[in-house]
Image (cartoon, rainbow, N blue to C red):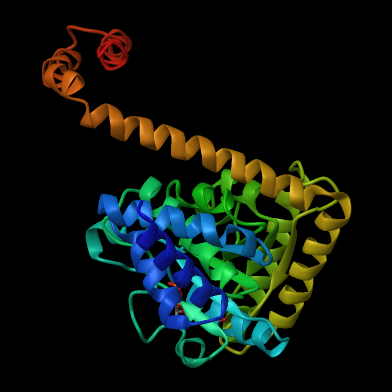
Length: 330
Ligand code: GDP
C-alpha cells in the first residue's frame, strides 16, 4: 500500500472516530466488498481503528422466524437509547445469499430505531457463505465501536450454524422463544439453549400470556439441568411483550448484571481474548483455503481427484494429502 493510500485511510479512520456516519457506512461497504484491493484497504482501516474499538457491550439475539426479533430489538434498543446508549444493529443471515437479505433488508423493520440519531442499522452482507458473513460482521462490529456505538446487537435467525458464529463474536447471547411449551421446547435445539446467557419468552401478552408463563417454567426447568456457560452466571428466563413493551427494562437490567458479573470475575475479558484468538484461526483457515483454491498446481489436480473421491475410488483423506503435497511443494 502506498503512502497516499495510507494517509487516505488515516483520514477515513479519523472521520469514523469523529462520528461521521457517512464515513462509517463507507467503511462497512469497503469491508463487504470482495475486491482484493478493497480487502487490503479494509484491513488497513481496521488496524487503524482497533485501538478505538472494544468499548461496547456486544449482544447476540437469536430466535425462530416470527418470534418477534425485530419488534424486540426496536423496543429494547429504544429503551437502551433512553438510558443514554448508542446502538448499532448488525445481522448475520447466510440465507441472504439466496434471497438477497431476509433479515433487516426490509426498511419498515425497526422504524423508530432507523429514524434515531443514536442508532445505526445495517442489514446482513449478502452473497457470501456463513464464514464470509461472520467475518464481515465481526469487522463491521469493530468499526461501529470505533464510531462510538457502545451497544452492539448482532441479530441472527435461529437456524443452522449462524447462532454459533454469532455467539463467537458477542459478550452476551440472548435467545428469544415463543410461548408454548412441551417436552421439545418448540424444537429449540439443546445446543442453542447451552449458548444462551439470557432466554426471553416473547409475546407474553393477551391470550398468549398463560402459554408464555408455562413456557418460561419449562425452560427454567430444562436450564436447571445444564452446565452454566460462564462461572458465576446461571442463564435465566424472562418474559416480555415486545409489542406492548413490557418486561423490556428487566431484560436491560439483566444484561447489565451479566456484564457486571463477568467483568468482576475476569470472565468478560477472558472471553474476548479467546474470541480474538478463535477469529485469528478462522482467518487463517479461510485464507489458506482461498490460497489453496487459487493455486495452479492444486487446480490442475483437483477435478480428477474430486471425481475419484466422488466415485469411491479414492479415500478423501488420501486426496487431501495429495493436494496439500502439491500445494506445499510448488
Ligand atoms: P421476527 O421474524 O423474529 O423478526 O419477528 P417480528 O418482529 O417481525 O414479529 C413477527 C410478528 O409477531 C409480527 O406480526 C409482530 O407484530 C408480532 N409480535 C412481535 N412481538 C410481539 C409480542 O410481544 N406480542 C405479540 N402479541 N405479537 C408480537
